[in-house]
Image (cartoon, rainbow, N blue to C red; front, side, top):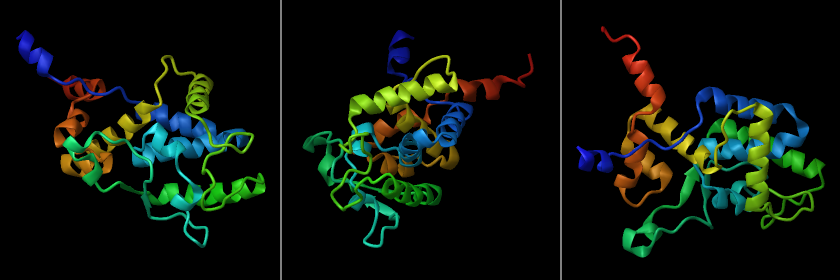
Length: 209
């Protein structure tokens, strides 16, 4: 029994639908929160990791006409090691239509804020027009969670977990989730197929007893 319990994966910690909807609503209601709103939308819409988001340049996301691309090829991404075939994985992400709309609006906002939008300029910049740092991004995520009144705080990586869990629940296709997650081994992806506490509550609510 102990051995089985040790082998059983626990689901990753994710935001509930109510939590991430509130996060997006609160950041979207404030002009000062628009940059962070777009960052959180990218994480929830693509499953990109913190470092991958920060590393994005305007040229990665926008084409020569200044429009958001459908596909984004990553220059910076997590490498799990050649033994696991990380460098053979297609390191590109597909952007949802709603996210492309926000990115197009965000580019116009950047121009209004006198932020550079050249091909090699950072997509997300600090107040000093330097590339946004991991430390500042984590601090902003924590501040917005406080503004939302979350009883418990999440790490930024929970947004990736939330995106991939939502994708599996919507499709029930573990191979599709593997591709979006860009995992070399599908066994890594199976963590998103684990039932959450909410799944268990819904399942047992109407049991005869």
